[in-house]
Image (cartoon, rainbow, N blue to C red):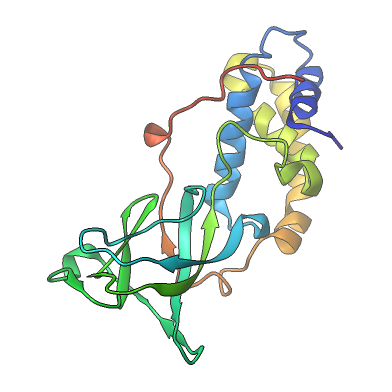
Length: 220
């Protein structure tokens, strides 16, 4: 297992056997591979539950999350009342909200792929809890979950993404076998089932809107 993301990039470089010819390209292809895997499934490491305080505002109806995570889907949003009862905030669509008024929000929607908007300007401080799935950042960082749960599978998917520049059918076929043999058990162990993840508000990822900052070699 690689100790850092730089070690992982070196493993990919050795696997494709092109010396350093494509080393600058590997980080970008690896990030694309992770994004593809995250688009296709809700992996357990993507799940986050956080708490915070919605502050009073007469002009801002957005829910700000620490660290500005790249959201894939929101599972729930709820407020904690004085009696410590949980008050669910329902999901809706912007066109169904007639007006934004002052008060406790009763509904939310995705204003953009990373912004959560609500149907009211908070008239007091509301403690909240939220559960969501988030995408890994670009460029990938050393804490990448794939280095611990299935590094060989990510190597395989990265090499498959590099096929247009590698043009090596035998190499691709060999690593495709690795992926095919690894994926079933991984899906069972590391993916949140459709039943568990139902009722989420999906935010589809599009490559066109993602600024690719991972095309620089960062080997360490």
